[in-house]
Image (cartoon, rainbow, N blue to C red; front, side, top):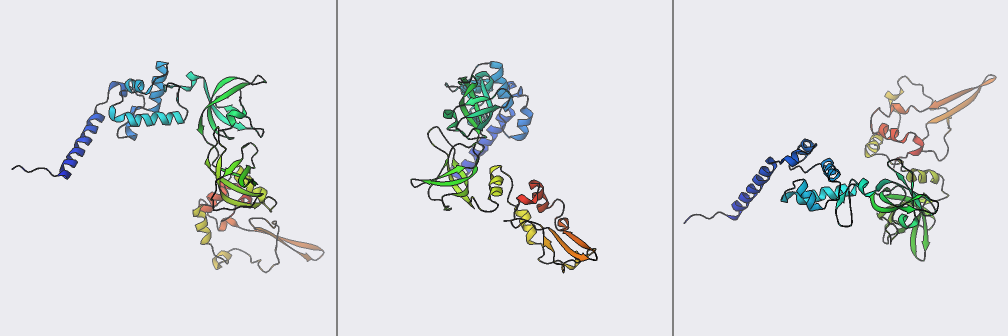
Length: 358
């Protein structure tokens, strides 16, 4: 009797036929796909290249009318095994505001739909404005639209009319990019519910704190909140406390708030921390070369009590009819080499007063 092939051999054979089919499909590129001005770039990046984003935009512009998914599939010669990946590409383009979908699920260019991209500028009173990417006149965003937006978000809007002052008023179509992932603010408690009021007054919405967090601040303290849910038309933003900075009146608190409010770097990199651990606790013999020992003098630092660094000091003594003043300035470059981790972190900060080693 002839031997029957085992299941493993059959599976391997099927996999081989599948790979062969994909190779054959890749080898056969239609004239439509070859017309893509960026076909070669896509072929270098992907084993099975799809039409480039630019080509999709070109086809939509040439047709001049909204196109549903199946129409784009035909127009761009999308094969059956490519449909799912092509759908993902279109949705990614939609998220980034390159294309939009109308109410019948047809794709079109934002310009054709009179849609405008820009960044939201919030106002403490609950309304806001769209600063347009194209430099046109700002668009007023009423409190209803701002309910699901925060200052700094990038959005797509449609002109819906004029406000009472005659300014163009926008209606939110889509949020393209959220600007706020962490917010610094003051904790308040209302009827057993913990809320954080942002220090940035342009963030006009209070943040509800999700229960069960590990950080347990007291009302009135300043905290950093990580947003776990962005605002919607029916819900406020929700966050969890990731850092308790302390009380508002604590020394240096205004600096800690400003660092987080303006998204400035305040933590050293792992590379910089590793370098500091290797620094000696005492001055080594080789470090004295070409230097004068002033350690026996009663030097007094001129840095304030809350300073993060103590690198300047003075000493003064009477000498004859006058005084002798010695100014000692730490030679930081002796320990911080150009281009190493500490040097890179210092460059990002611009000044040492805003940095601290954790």
